Image (cartoon, rainbow, N blue to C red; front, side, top):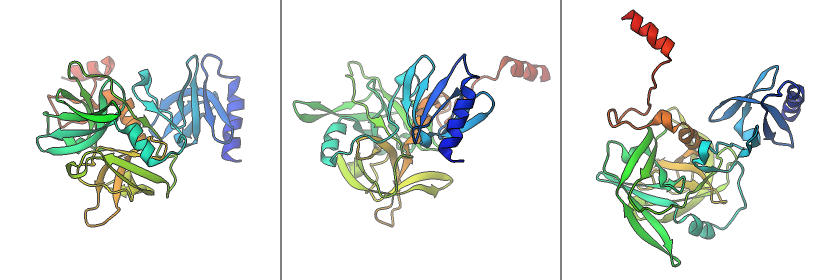
Length: 317
């Protein structure tokens, strides 16, 4: 039985059993699946179709309609609760890099600390931005340089009231927030899908290598699954240098498919980026990665155990 047939039969068989709530997944090859979403993972959705539970890869999902809410996500669909960020599941129309650079110019920023600098990009208009954890590691004095489009030109402006919202040092990600009084609305990027890329696809990066702000480099995707220290990265021939860290890696639709974070120093064209799927998972669960000034090196915020478990622990004492 083909993948399409398997999920089509599951949808038909389960449709009559799910009357209270039905979420609909639009799949590839004009198939669909109706059921109750039990869990949303970084790479898949767990769906109850009535008589069994299926794990559906996000790479096979073209759209998601929740009961009573309409379509809220596409393809890898983690357009998170409250629309914290914008996500697109499959690439949009291909454009020239020169045109895309003008479009994303206001979205890419330079992140500065007393120890150095890196890059970043806005994920929503309220001043929330992504960068690498190693760019701000051990730092609390952070400033962000933004390039606002005014009268056809990009004017630099520095914001110094920057708060660390969440960190994940294992995936080398950090979420920052600009809190300067009078700060305008910012221009966010759209998060794309690294899963939707193919090896050989053209990509480009915008960042501040060695402090040279607004540098654009272009290359191709060399591999989607390069394992480095237990993590999977996108490998690209796009030139990545110190200062690019935390900046976006775009596809030719102007969507962020990765976050550039390292290169092999003794070679050329060996750059690496964190896949967009991990970025979306980090943003969706940002409360679990909330930064704490009491323990700034801890990437997780541990919640209180349920009352029943807590009572047992107290009784043991």
